[in-house]
Image (cartoon, rainbow, N blue to C red; front, side, top):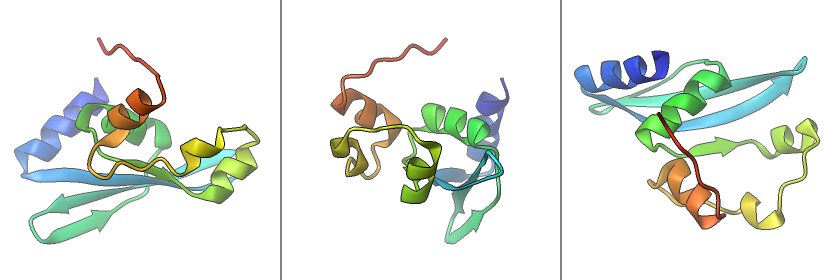
Length: 105
């Protein structure tokens, strides 16, 4: 799978995914920015949210969303989810904290 390959590639070059931000929603398309660290250098690139969300699941990196994206998408999220941040714990901790389980093959 592509996201497993991306994770392996990051590890092979000594880099890691620091975090992912879902930055905007334009023309019904989401735009994401992953931040990759290699030593003292960080790089941010444009990416499809589906790719970086899959990578977040593998790496455990945190994921953030702009408030405007949550509001523009029109879905109601419980208020307590908006302030749910667990630095360094990633998606697993947020899911566990909110009683969500998942299976990865």
